[in-house]
Length: 93
Image (cartoon, rainbow, N blue to C red):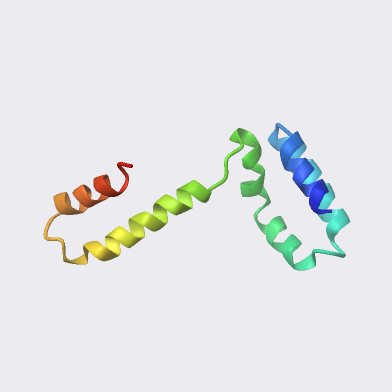
């Protein structure tokens, strides 16, 4: 079942076909992955967006986490320019 799910994400190139295959896989996998399938059903639209440009939100989440850490560290900054400078230093690599 795991390999069949991987094949869906590797082989389909449209949201419609990928979503249809994913729903079919969910029906087959119901006895094995019942808890996980509830999450998949609740987020099916967002998951199917992967087929649009083949990207995941991991990079975006990492950037957001960096921003949150810098914001917490910048609590004592007197002005916005100092905060902006810190952001530029962090993301200039």
